[in-house]
Length: 172
Ligand SMILES: [Fe+2]
Ligand SMILES: [Fe+2]
Image (tube, rainbow, N blue to C red; front, side):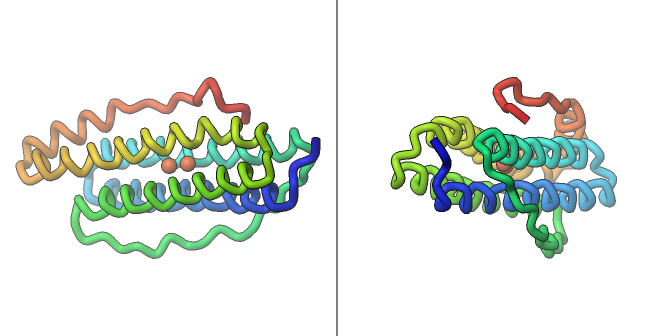
C-alpha cells in the first residue's frame, strides 16, 4: 500500500528538521569546545550523530516505501550563547519543538489511517520523551553543580564518558 502525499510530505520535511537538529547541536559542541569544556562538546557531538541517524531512518523508511525523498536546504543555526547554561536551555526548547513535529507527523498518519507509518513513528515518540528528560536533567545538573569550578569539572568528565551507540532498532 503506497504512502499518501500528506504522509510523504511531512516525513520528507522531518528529514530536514532532524538534519537541522544535527547541525544545531554541532554549534552547541562548538560553543563548549571553545570554552574548554570538551565533555559537554563530546555530548553534543554524539547528539548530532544521533540526529543524523534519525534523518537517515526516515529517509530509509520513505525509500523502502517506494518514495524518493528530496533533500532540501538546511537552515543556518543562528543562536549565540554567552553562558554555559544557555545552550542547555535552548536544547530543551528545541526538543520540545521537535516533539511537536513528531506528534504532528503521527497525527497526519493517523488521519489517513496509515497504521504502518504510525508504528514506524512509535519509536520517535518514545525517543522524544527521552530527549526531553535528558535535556531537563542537564539543566538541573548545571544549575546544581555548574556554578562551582570543581562541580563543573566533574560534570564535564561525566559528559566526556558518553559514547556513540547506533540504535539497534533504527533501520538506516
Ligand atoms: Fe531527532
Ligand atoms: Fe533530538
